[in-house]
Amino acid sequence: MNNKKIAILGAGPSGLAQLRAFEAARLNGVENLPEIVCYEKQSEMGGMWNYTWRTGLDKHGEPVHGSMYRYLWSNGPKECLEFADYSFEEHFGEPIASYPPRAVLKDYIIGRINKQNISQYIKFDCPVRWVTFNDETKMFTVTVMNHKTGKQEVNDFDYVVVATGHFSTPNMPYFKGLEDFPNRVLHAHDFRDALEFKNKEILLIGGSYSAEDIATQCYKYGTKSITISYRTQALGYDWPEGISEAPLITHFEDEIAHFADGTSKRFDAIIMCTGYLFHFPFMPDPLRLETNNCLYPENLYKGVFWQSNPQLIYLGMQDQYFTFNMFDAQAWYARDVMLGKIELPKLDIREKDEKIWLDTYSKVQTVNEEIDFQAAYIRELVDATDYPEFHVEKQGDIFKEWKKDKKGGIMSFREKAYRSTLTNNMAPELPQPWLEILDDSLEHFLHISFEKETNSIPKK
Ligand code: FAD
Ligand code: NA7
Image: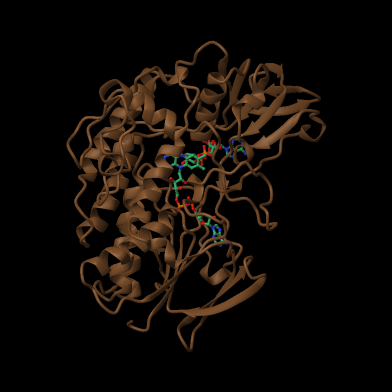
């Protein structure tokens, strides 16, 4: 051991990336690795991909982290989130379709971790309660509630890696008259099963990924009518009959919603698809990241190191085109800093670097420019470490195709197939139209994916 101690907060894809990065160093013969503890508030790893039927509070009375719903499918091509050190083909034995359901992606995330016995570092059922930094000892003190023992634990660390995600605490706006709306009002965070809304007329408020995904999913499972109310811009897809868009709500009167264009409609339920708050209740003000959902949060050098104290690292805090491979790129870079392989420059240089990125970001206007911006950010990180090459720019091109494919058919874009930038193999097409695949379990997905060619589910 090099006597350094590292606390990783959260065992979702970002926290697991950090654990995997250190494991990769160990397998490459790096000695004197630091002592690592990962605190996870849930009883399982996988973060957001760990589906839960619970809403509100969990079995320990902690806020439920999960925002994912039962029939969720990947909203972007899997070719753009593939781990560079563990391809989908390596995990499943054969190429699979480009848009897998939730359970398939979770299986893939966990597969990389299980192969290497990384879970030994994770302390489950341990929500982090409070973090402080001592300016004299230059150490953090982390207090966690260990629900397994029923006792609080307090430990000191040289580095703290915050990987607790930012799509969990609902942003819940108020609209006049809402308190008198007699039917169900919920946030996307608490949406679980589209069948709850079968034959109902529902209102979705918000104009981004959650709204479009919950709309298409509810349509798939038999919701009678879906109205999407947007604040800034309509999603503008060629919606099937039964889905429509309206400008923002002005007020509610009993069951009736009134919209800014003077129209009105009665609803059985309202789902707020209004995004999430960055919420770090365990962080004191001087260490707490405050940002909105954007591609380059302020006060982070290289998008990860807390400027005024780079012993504090935030992973995965960007809005995300790229996900798993971006978290890996960040984690490998952070690892090399913690191992002393990369030396951080002084504060003024770090701030200049951040300013250059923020200036570039301020000029970004189109979706394609956003994709290029995030790809360039990842490129810089990847080039500084031994994280394997994964052709992030080519993946950016796939994202640009994805945008076009969604415009071409919001109910069918998941039937498109792309080429892996790792294996160079083409994904097979989804064997049935997405709208017809109601069973999205891992078993069913693998069965319909492989039965044509092999008549069997391949061994993992
Ligand atoms: P998370 O996955 O949120 O994990 C954070 C972890 O930290 C959790 O395990 C949580 O329990 C733990 N934690 C939180 N607070 C504490 C605490 N105080 N103490 C200890 N542990 C704590 N991405 C895609 O690539 N494709 C998709 O199709 C996609 N769909 C999505 C759909 C929805 C509805 C949502 C909400 C997100 C979606 N995402 C998708 C983005 C998703 O957030 C990322 O894929 C990924 O899960 C982010 O990883 P993370 O580790 O940063 O955060
Ligand atoms: P996003 O992408 O952060 O979008 C939030 C949306 O909510 C956005 O369209 C906002 O409108 C809208 N919003 C926020 N506040 C309001 C109010 N007060 N009134 C009306 N509309 C509002 O969150 P999502 O949940 O869609 O997606 C987050 C992740 O989950 C994403 O990565 C997916 O993978 C799943 P705006 O455009 O700002 O006017």
